[in-house]
Image (cartoon, rainbow, N blue to C red):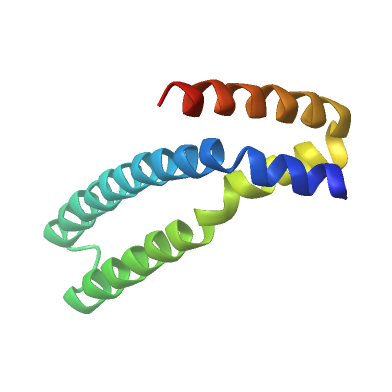
Length: 111
């Protein structure tokens, strides 16, 4: 457990930055999927297979589904990093932590 805590604290700049990048790409993916379903719902509405209330209900449900999936996925990478350091490879996490400390000291020593 201590190795996992050391790993998650020392690698936090990495997984926080990766989480931000991951969320931006996932947001763009969900926006694209939302507009694709909007397009197909408009086609189905024009053909006459759906009523207008079904169209708006499916849009609302689709939007809420994508929004909550995005909110849920905020912690995805932190859990992966925690599982790596705590359960999967604790000794590798300790070695990488020492290496990251060395890199951090090299970066901040020149500043």
